[in-house]
Image 1 (cartoon, rainbow, N blue to C red):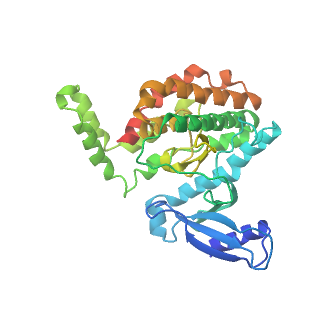
Image 2 (cartoon, helix red, strand yellow):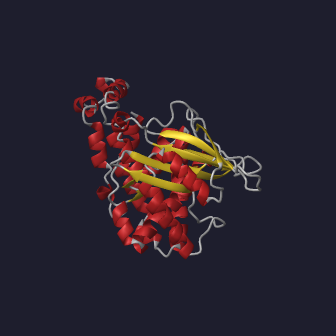
Image 3 (cartoon, rainbow, N blue to C red):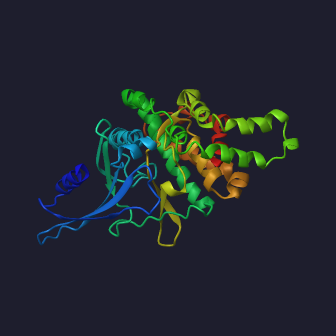
Amino acid sequence: EYVRQRVLSVAKQQGFANNPTITYEPGSKTGDGYIGLIVRARLIETEPTERSPLSIICKFPPEDRQKREQFNAMALFEREHFIYQRVLPAFEELQREYNLNGEDDRYFGNYPKCYHTYCDTERGEAVLILEDLTDPGRPALTMLNQYVRVDYDHVRVLMLALGRLNACSFALKQHRPKLFAELQRLNDLLSIVLDTEQMAPLTPRHCMLAASAFHPRQLPPDHHAELLNLAMDMWRRTGIHIDGKRAEPYAALNHGDCWTNNVMFEYDAHGHVKDICLLDWQMARYSSPVLDYVLFIYLCGERELRRDKLESLVQTFYDSFSSTLRHLGGDPERALPRDELNNQMRQFGRLALVMGT
């Protein structure tokens, strides 16, 4: 009921009459969104009017308390609520102050429009009402097949967007220090979710498989044992390892769950990829700026990206970061020196191995 009331609120906000016709249907494939429910709502004006129908996506936690607690659903919805209510609007406001808009290549707007967000953890209620990215009335976006490796052209567009995201994060640090201080408290939720009662049993099996890829004689004795022992404490150690404090003073906002199923691409008339939209900010965290692209390149990208194109892609990220941050009044070389990305890669890149396991 609380979701329906908020859909009606959005309808009123968007200029619909008091009683529009609202139809609901599943907003994702079966098996997606196990931490929450995703429903597509279509608003149609009841009375004859020129007002076009509006399709929106409603994302909310399970009604069953036990299911919410199984995957820490309320913590995840609280995190995404904070991102859409506080952080992304602050990015937008900062960019407007410096005359950056969607017509400029330096502008960061690579996320769905949010019509409404609400979260009450004590009541176990939360809802995000977002634009429907599959609506025929907007530029078409495509989600790639998660089982097909992503090529250079697509990853390059992602790197441009991540560069702009990090630029906005560093600009927030400079211009909105109080809000940035709140952002600094965003711990890693992914390692917490993967260490729950439901997910943790998978870890030992996966570590055993990883260890079996090496013959004990190929590794120093303690290394093979370490691979097996890691299973017992992997996610707790991972959360500690990627804590934002360890990346200071260069830590920034991460999307936190950057992989094929959480991005959609836009193409031009010739079929060339031109833009990207970052979905699902529930795992957003404060950590090293390299983590998002390290995970995507190593877990989702073609092998050649790691072997031959990594330096080019990282430079694309840094050029995008520098261009946007400079326009927002920052000094990119001082805020995040280019060489520091290599240092952070060496320090935090092992997360890709953990996630690959």
